[in-house]
Length: 279
Ligand SMILES: Nc1ncnc2c1ncn2[C@@H]1O[C@H](COP(=O)(O)OP(=O)(O)OP(=O)(O)O)[C@@H](O)[C@H]1O
Image (cartoon, rainbow, N blue to C red):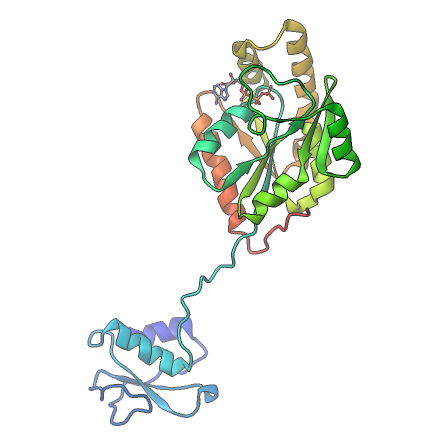
């Protein structure tokens, strides 16, 4: 068995013959006829190290013998490097289910920080400052812009909205992955700022019809705003090729969309060449 193992894992080495042991360089018990002598590399000296047979020896004894043969001990340090914190940008046309996916992700996965956006919009009943949004005055917001404290910002229907850099830095420093939910224009700005150092995910419904049905069923839009959202969504669909991944959120399949997003996070964490957020 060991012969086969050596053959497979160390093909450049001669397969050691089975042999009897009389003396040992290392203080191991004298081995019987099942022992195997292994001619060590020149780096490890010219000593012959006895490797006890698999069926007779204890695992710890075998490990010590293998370590002695190789001339170094086995490390229990992780073999994969620590993954960098990830910045995940989630975007997509209106009504495709971005918020629904993010709400599920909050419950299903730990170690994520969902960025709280700063806004000049007045606080609505039930909204909590610092949780739903960071509510600031227009002057305060413009001060943040001037001090270059925002990663991205936009004027939306007369109110400013922006992503505070320091919040992202603080949470990345604590080892959190960062999730940002932005519109397509925001994603484009972030791509310019962050380049390939962040992961961009485009969420879509399974079809245009499904997306419109979802917006209608949500009952949050007037007919006018519905028409604007639909024509905007048609334009936005053309930008899909600027993203790294597409997640289809099909009707009744929210869970699958969340699982796919989690797989994307896992795959990104397993990358050999990790992205290093440019912040
Ligand atoms: N997989 C799904 N199946 C059925 N309904 C869904 C699914 N995903 C989301 N929805 C519903 O579709 C509606 C729109 O979803 P949501 O508000 O999350 O979209 P959104 O992309 O965040 O929209 P907006 O950009 O306008 O804020 C909601 O009523 C939501 O509950």
